[in-house]
Each structure stands twice: as structure tokens, then as C-alpha cells.
Length: 537
Image 1 (cartoon, helix red, strand yellow):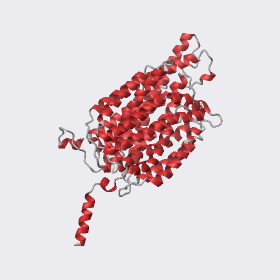
Image 2 (cartoon, one colour):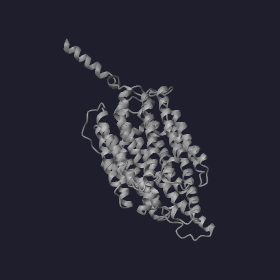
Image 3 (cartoon, helix red, strand yellow):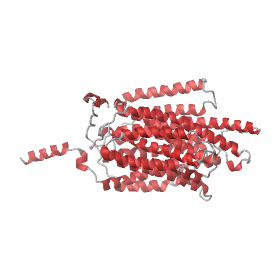
Image 4 (cartoon, one colour):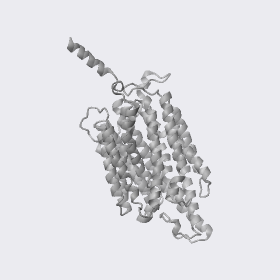
């Protein structure tokens, strides 16, 4: 009799959703998130802290516009390749251990980056930094999904957005102050994140206690990771060099484009046969996952494009110091932080999320279009308004695309699905920055040559690839250079706007499913949807 009662209790307990048994209080969740949020701050800081320092760094290491782009895209590319690996591993082994390993990789890579003696070494270290930072960014969202059901996840996603904004604000300011402080120097842009990372590792050890699933020996899809990295890298190299080292319509273009596409097709074949695929293709049977992933790629172009080239605009078109350039980007970051936090609270309260995605992509497209009118003499009040609009759009979009996907897939696929969205966002950002950087270099050279010709100044060096030091140029040349950079960066923003429009169109076709109140609960069918449709959505 006693054994029968005990068995019955066990059956009852096993049928209870995990969140009902182990649901954490708001305070417990915040304590557990403290280390994750600190880690996110450090990971984002790794890219933003160098944004305003890059012109000074490249002058010191003798790099040009193409090097400027690759210092940024190298980290984005490694984040792109590593994110699905981290996501897949998180479904198989301890999430806590993984995020700590990612932080250790970041610390070591940052220390090496600070010792760089050449552009090549710096780019290599940025690749290592991206591997660690990608793990921290992806695993933060995955750990949150493991702790909190979708209905309550909105307000905590808002915290992630706010920390992202804080790091984006603090990064350029910290980097600017470091570069402008003679007794520090630009190398401290890489060292400054190390203490934060070490503290994050300790905090994670003390506070992050996740209900870990039964672990099993992972089968890593190394071939898939190699193929997708090679595909994206080849296409990025083509974009960076075409029109400068060879013509757009040339045999080099044909080889690189066809080679990149062939590698991508081979990646798909490998993923279909892999025991543990890097990106499970079955995820894309969910319409929400497929559309959100594609939308993230197009949003990533606007997100990384604006943060990459704004610092260059203020320093080389507005003649501001690195510290001033960081301060002048505050409107965009404030818009991102406020909109992300407010939207998260409203989503938690009402359980609706699609309206924020639609509004966010519209505002992002509008903000980028308005920023496309920027020139070296554009009034800052107008620029601040344009940046604010773009920032609000980013805040309403980036985190909520992940939330939409997490609300669609079952618990055991949260890691792979979350990292897939991040993968597409960073891939879109990496390729977008590479393409926009190549466009910027071409446009600046063209506008500079035109300005020199109009002023009757010999064009020697006008079309060069170097990042100019405005303080060392003759006074009559400086306005010609600032005009070229102002017009060039404005063109880049204008070209980025249509990508956000495509993101808007994709978001329109995402079907809104009410947020679940439990991680183990199946998504509720929207009004008018057939039961069979839910499986595919």
C-alpha cells in the first residue's frame, strides 16, 4: 500500500511542469542574472570600446579603411560561426560551465589583443574575442529561457536590452577616454574588460543555479562549422576587395561568389546528415523561426552598421575627439535602452509581442533613411533625432525576435533555436559591415578626389586607403576630407535602410502566438488557426 502511494506521488510529481516545481522568484532570477548581465556587458564592451579608438589604433598600426572594417567584422564573423556551436552544446552539457568557459576565452583573447604589434595580429585576436563574446551573448539568452517561462520573459529581456545599451554607451566613452589619456594608450581598450570578465566568472559561480538536464556526450559538428565559416568568409573577402583589387565583373568575382554559394550548399547537405547538426534544419519547419531568423539578418545590418560607422562619422566628418564621439551617439543608445525596457514590461503585462516588432522595423528603416541625409555640416539636433528614432527601432526589435522564437519551440530546442536567431543576426551584421565598409572606402575616395579636383589641389593620395589624421593635414585640405567622410557615411546609412524595410516585410508574416506561461506548455493556437497549422508554426 505504501509503495503504491509512493509510486502515485512520483507519477503526479513527474507530470507537473518544471516551472511549477522549480519556479524562481523575481529576486532569485535577478541574482542568477547578475553574472549573465555582467558578462553581456563585457561581451558588448569588447566591440564598442574600440569603435571610437579605431582611427587612432589604425594610424599607430598603419592600417587603412579595409583594416578598419576587418577589425570589426573579424569579431562578428567568429561570433557568427561560434554561436550555433555554443547553442548546440547548451542543449547537451552544463550551461553554467559553458558560459564560464566563454568568459575565460574572452579574457585570454583580450589580453593578447592588447599586445598586438600588427594589424594581422589584432584581427586574429579579435577572432578569438568573438568566439568568447559570442558564447556569452548566446548563452545569456539561453540561460534566461531555462529559468523563466515566455510570458514572464519580456521584462527580463528588457534588462538584457538595457545592459546592451549601457555597454554601448559606456564602450565608446571608455574607449575615447582611454585613447585621449596619454599615459594609458589604446591598448587599454582591450585590457579594460578583463577585470569585469573575471568578476563575472566569480559571480556566475556563486549565483547561477540552473535546473540542468541530464548531460550526454556531445557530437560536435566541426565540418558544419568549418563550411559555414568558409562560406561567409569567402563572400566577405569578395565584398571587401571587389571594385578595388579587381573589377566587380571579373573571374575573381565569379570564383568567390560561386565558391561561397557552393560551400553554403554543401553546409546544408552536411547538416541534413549530421548526428548533432550545428543548425538543426528541422527548426525551419516552424514558420516563426524561419521568418524571425531572416528578419534578424536584415536587422543585423542596421544594428552593426550604425554602431560601426557612427564613431567614424563624428571623428572624421565632425572633427570630434573619440570621447566626444561617444557622447554624441547617446541619443541612439538612450532610445534603445528605454524602448527595450518599456517594451519588455508591456509584453510581460499583455502577452503580445508582434506589434513591437512591426513598429521597431518601421522605426529602424525610418531612422536609417533619415541618417542617410547626414553630411559634415548637418545640425546635431537633427542627427540626434534621427539616431533616437533608429535606437528605438533597434530596442523594439532585436530582443523580441529571440523571444518570438523561444515561444515557438519546445524546451529541449531552446538553445539551438535561440542561437540560430543570434547566428543570423551576427551573420547579417558581419556581411553588412563588410559590404558597407567597402562601399564607404570607395565613396570616400571618390568624393575626396572630386573635392580635390574642384579645389585645384593635386589629387595625389586622395584615393588612398588610409585613415587620415586630420590634425596633421594642411588646413585647406581638412574641409575637403570631412566633406568626403560626411557624404560617404551618409550614403552608407541610406543603403542600409532598405535592409530594415525587408526586415519589416518579413515580420509582417510572422503569426503572433500568445506567450506561454510555462516552458513545457505547447504554444496556444492563434484565433482561426487550425491545429495542423500549429505544428508548422
